[in-house]
Length: 408
Image (cartoon, rainbow, N blue to C red; front, side, top):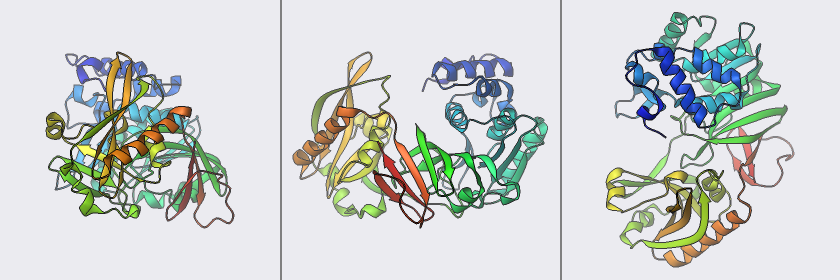
C-alpha cells in the first residue's frame, strides 16, 4: 500500500479534493468496476464520520482504528477504503435493494450503501456496542442519511423485522455463516462476508449467491483482514510464541505439539529456492489458501515484528501473510526474492529436525500449484445438517451452522 502522501495532497483542507484524490488512488489499484461505487466514494463525506482525526487522516488509504480494548487491541475501525470498495463491488447493490449490514462501526459503509440503493432502497445496519451505534446514528443523521436504521444488537442474530434482504454484508471477520443470515437472505440474494477459513485467521471476503434454500456459492474471493466479529459468533485465535517477536497462528483442531513448535527456531534456518517465478501483477494472492487446502501437513501463519525481521530471524514473504506449514517440531514458510522489477522467485525456509524432508514436501506442493496456478477458489456453503451433499469435490470445512467446501 502506498503511503498517504502518494495518495492525497495533505496540504489541502478541501474535503472534496481529498475525496477525489482517494478515489483516484483506489481507481489506480483497479478496484472500481462500476461508476456507482466510484460515485458513492466521491459523495460520502468520510471525514464527518471520523471527527477525532484530522482531515488528511480521515482520507488515508488505510484503516483508522476508532475503538480499542483495555489491552490496546482494536475493537472497531473504519476499514481500509480499498477493501470497502472491493466488498461493495462484490455486493453489487442495485437501486431499490433491501440491505442488511452487520457491523455499523462509524456508519461510513452504511452511507455508501445508501448511495447505491437510492431513495427507494432500505438500509439497516447493526452494531454490538451502544456507544458505537449511537455515534454511527448521530453521524448518519448529521450527514443526511437519517433514513438508515441503526440497530444496537448482536449481528449474529440479524434483524428479522426487515427481512428478507436482497443483500447482506458483514464488516467483521466471521467464523461461520450463522443461521440468522441463512434465514434472512432472500433466494437469489447475495451475502458478502470476510470469512475466516482457518483458525490461523486466514480470511477471504467471499460473495455468496443464494441459489436455493440450502446452497450458496461464491466464485469471488478477495484477500482482506478484519477485526474479528464479537458476540455470539465470536471465535478466538491460538498462538504459539516461537521467539520474542515471532508468533505462529494455528488452528487448534490440528492438535499441534505446541512445546515442539516453540523450539523450532532453535534449529538453524535452511533456505531452498524453487526457481518458480511469480510476477507482481499475477493473480497469485490465494497461494496461501491453496496450500492450506491441499496439504496433509498443518497450516499456520507467522506474525513477525520489525525487530525479528531486521535481525533476519524470520523473514516470510509479506505477499502471503506469513504462510507456513508445520509437522511436529518442523516448520517451513514461504519467502521470496527479487528476480527483476516485475518478478519474484518463490522460496522456502525450514527449521526443525526434519527440515530437509519437509522442505522437499513443501517444494512438491508449490510445483503442484505452479502446474495450474488457480486464480480463484470456488466456495460452496450449505446449512449444517442439510440432507445430502450437493457441494461437490474439494476441502470440507465444518462449522456450527454451515458446511463449506473449497475447490479449485
